[in-house]
Image (cartoon, rainbow, N blue to C red; front, side):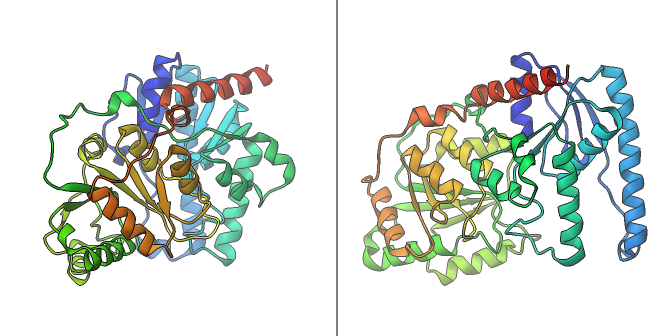
Length: 377
């Protein structure tokens, strides 16, 4: 996400200096980039909390010392920490305490009370304390949607809410490749991203099965592409996805494609006929994946499976697209049939989409940067 933002920052007059994990690959941007290692200890020491905490504190001290050198060398006048990962915000708060520089933190997801997390007890209390320290040290706090802002800030003193701002995820039209619009024999549904227990294709597969039970003549008129869905770490190896495809009677109609680069994923978005977004079935979900905004920037129609009232649901409906919750399998099946038959459509709200253009989000963010620095003079 940050990689597609920084080039526009530069175009709009910012001179950024980037501190990033050394595991993130090369940054193809016209800016100074410094690499740092991720925190890592062996599994035996990790089982001993006092040693783990000591080594983590020492890790942050080394990073802070490195940052002090970089700040002095480049005459830095504002610190912006972008998360995830939350280590970015933790380090930003430490730098703020050491230097007093204007500090803006960023949350793309909740941390302490994440609906997808399993932290409790002492770990939860520790994370809440760290999150509050970040908010207290921040001069401004950026969230990617209003629901996320409220979701996080409700756990902290009301006076901290005055620091909260919303700058949404973005897309950059310059990133999308030009593709030929050749007529295809089969309609292509594409899902791009990893499957997780809380977010997988089973509801979509079930809707397709019901569709084909009622309209078997559509079986040879569509194709599903799952790009990057298979992942051993998330519990969805290719073998398991293959079994799901077989169980739902979709053998020969679904392609499981290995993960691709960000640039390549944009190409898949452009050459598809419909893009699928599948959210976890969580009440009061605060999530709006950046992928959904990339989808929208591609101009390809989007179909959502998401809880009612989620940020994704709101975004898609404002755009003019359809979204279904997990209890609407029959409605989803009917909609899929209309897509395949070329009967689904609708007028897209381009004016709404424009606010997510990286040009617009960068202007808003730079305005917050300037307001923060001016307040410190």
